[in-house]
Image: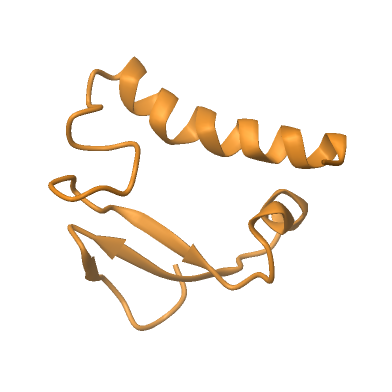
Amino acid sequence: MHPSEDVTAEAITAGTINGAWALRLQERKGSIEPGKDADLAVFDVEDYREIAYWVASNHCAFPVLNGQVAASKPC
């Protein structure tokens, strides 16, 4: 694994499951599991590790809120 891949994975973890724990919302948010809220963004990239390199542009394909596609247009 390249060092930048570690940083990307750590950033995603910090913003998802660790963020939910910090806010004491880990029972409802922070990971994709049955029974959780399923609030997430789907990105139009080849590999999740690309997301960190596209921060200045919007590559979000669509948001999902409560398990339902929230918009047909990009985020």
